[in-house]
Image: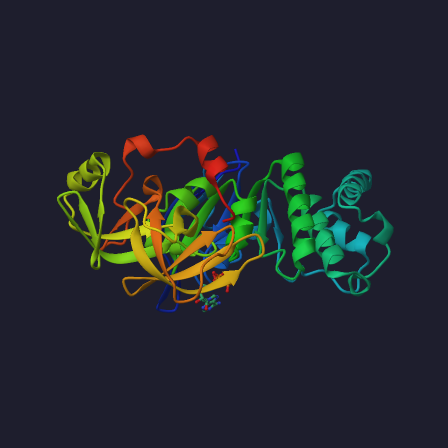
Length: 377
Ligand SMILES: Nc1ncnc2c1ncn2[C@@H]1O[C@H](COP(=O)(O)OP(=O)(O)OP(=O)(O)O)[C@@H](O)[C@H]1O
């Protein structure tokens, strides 16, 4: 049972609170991604798990045992860093096996593990090369092999792919998933790249300024954001956020324009006793037309961006910037368009707390439906 649990964890550097009141559990054998903007505390959390940073307050458990005072060498953790941290004077083979030799693992066992990992990561042709004689992708595979042969219960990765080009990142990510499928360690993976998080994580822990914002599956983080920060951080382009939306008697007022809500949405908002709301809607859930459709609102096209497979149309909706995604661009800059909102995909947030005010039960979609609906996060 290789789980990890944070209970009321705080981490301070001097007077600076870096991690505040962290409470969450990483399940045994899952691929958890720690995601968030630069400086939000992702590496600090990973380093606390590895034992490279102490926990200022609270409790950290691994295998349900409190490990605050357990040194790194006794936590059974393998770690891969962004810069790979290979020994420059050692060959590939020596780099991979050094840790095992230090631990006095029997030679035949070392050879067995080396053979399996090197085979799997296609490193055999490079055994006798030094790191300086390898490409970035090959060095990265050596770092992965070095951690893999440890047979550790935990595999911690701190932005391991950030030095690779786009093509190599995809193949390295696949290699990592294969390692996980084969060895089934508990993987904790730090990145600030939301696409990497969406494609790699079985769950995502999204952080901002040392505070956990949401912990859930990629599907839920994308489709059911817990707060405005999550809706804006996840998705490219991010969700549109329309502030100062007023609700009265079944009508949503957005500036001078109004949307008549169905009875179902009317009940939903009224039950929560709100009249001031923030409306969130993803770009792919806005459809544009040149002629009015019932329930649509007016907007002005500011400009469009060709994104290859589609177009991001930047709009002015009542003085607020919004983006719609369209398969083709038939709109001119400055043109007036009509925006139809996919009503079952809207989100309402509280103006003060910025938290999602909740989802009505009948729009809770099954995971398979969510996956089908997902579009290029
Ligand atoms: N040893 C240290 N002493 C003081 N402050 C530190 C130390 N290490 C990190 N910090 C600060 O703690 C905060 C969190 O750093 P951390 O490296 O965990 O962020 P991160 O989310 O991993 O960022 P990035 O994506 O840029 O690597 C930052 O503000 C950083 O400046």
